[in-house]
Each structure stands twice: as structure tokens, then as C-alpha cells.
Image 1 (cartoon, rainbow, N blue to C red):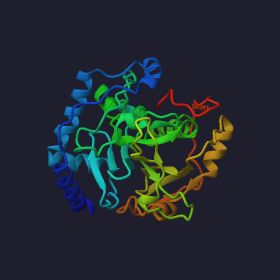
Image 2 (image 1 turned 180 degrees about the vertical axis):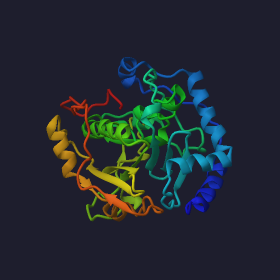
Image 3 (image 1 turned 90 degrees about the vertical axis):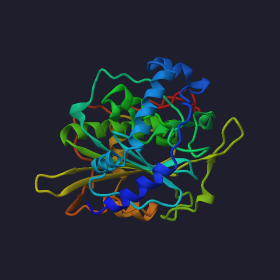
Image 4 (image 1 turned 30 degrees about the vertical axis):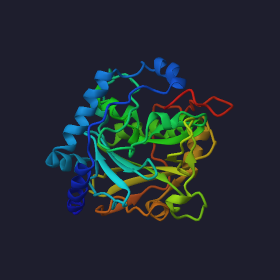
Length: 332
């Protein structure tokens, strides 16, 4: 793979920034009721076991490279100076230590391997692979507006309890308001899993956009809006939009993709209107490249970009955000 030298450089850099950290697994107090409804929080022992999986993989360069290549079969975008490439067994995070959000995540989704017996247990915690204050924390999200929004969702990680726990590392979280996180983004995640069942394996690339001035290109980091926490810190940047790209290999060897670019606003379409909304926000790789500076799928050839959502069956879109005021009680 042409991207292999890049992976090797990034893995060495990642290894240099690893250090064990005590797990921070408890959800902020305001979210305890929601966590209980979903099966509660992971225990200290469960968090430690999940952290060990991450640290063991980080210390094994050969396995690290093979795992990254599985989730990024057409290579990875070049990394910026503040970005750290973090590889889990079941997905990859590109995390910006200055903005304290994932710039992107990538996963190979194998729906036939999902374990429906794996229930959700919230396990929000500091990423043990990052030193000092590089990782965001659950306490950064202790405020009234934004959810801890998964970039790669828990439901895509139901291969095992440990895989599920490791979807909750804070490096996989970005601030998302309720109407996006539990609304149209959640709906798009549900649809994507229907696509994964129809096109196995499916590759999903999720990302953050910082274009607050609306000029179609990435803003300087200094211009990013920051989330104000109840601890009076403003460490975590708030993306202006998010995107999801799904891809699979066609029988003729070409790569079929669909890209959806969603503004980070309070739109909350429901039912059939949600599908219309998503179709109105189908985008393309060129637009994402201009917005983010990222060349996604750099080694892919014979690309076919869909101009509409792919068909899906067995799901009626439903928003889970019903709050009339900004909600902090639930975290997707």
C-alpha cells in the first residue's frame, strides 16, 4: 500500500507520546440517570481492561500497522502537526491535541460480526495513550449545551464488550448539540448500519469541519469556538459541521462512495423529512478536501461518487432529541 511509509512514521510518533493514565470512567453527574437507562457506567476494572487493550496494541508496531491498514485500505490523509494517529483494534482516530477533538475516524464495519448481546455501558474516560492534558476529559463536557458526540459510534463497535468500551475514549468525542447528535447524525448512523449489512465490508470515514466563517476552507485553529465548561475552562473546540463518507468495493473493483455533510445547527428533521434532509446534504470528496485540507482515500482508483443516499430497508428515521431547550442530560 502506498500509504505504508506514512503509517510507519505516525506509529513511531504515537509510541513516543504514550503513557499509562488512571482511567476516568464515570459520566458527569448530570448524565447519571441517562447512563443508568442505558445499562450504567463501566466499572473501574472494565475501564482498566479496555485501556490495556489500547496500550498493548500501541506497543506492537507490526500489529498496529496491520490494523490501521485494515481500516484504511486506500491510505490515510496526511497528518497535521497537532494530530495524533490512535489505532484501536476496531477503528482509527486522528485526534488534534490543540482542538481536542477527532479530526476524523475510520472503520471497517463488518455487520455480520456484531454481537447483539453486547449492551451499552457508558465508559467515557481520558485516552490512556496521551500524555499530560492532551486528551479531552468528561469534565470538559460538564456544561448545558453539548453532548459528548461519538465520531465512531458505539453501535458500530458491538463486536465485544471491550470494543464497545473503547468507543468511549474521549479522543473519539466531539461536541454536538442534541438536535445533531441524537437527531440527524444518529439517523445517519442507523442508515449507515443498514448499508453495512448490504455491502460487507463497509468502510466509514467520519470527520469534523472547522469553517465558522463559511468561506469553504478550514479556519485557523485560533478562530475555533471553544466549549465553555462549568469548571471555567474552554479547552474543546466546537466543529461547525460534520461529515460521513461510506465506501465499499464494487464487483468490478471500483470504489463506490457516498458523502454526507451536515451543518452543526439545531435542525431536527424527523421521519421521511430526515431522509429528504440527508439527500439535500449529499456532498462529494472534493468539497470535503477543500473544507478540511484532507485527501481522503488517497490510493483509491476508479471512484464512483453517489449523488444521492444509497437505498436502505428496515428503518424508519426517528430523532431521539425531544428537548425544547438545550439539553445536557443525555450523551449519545
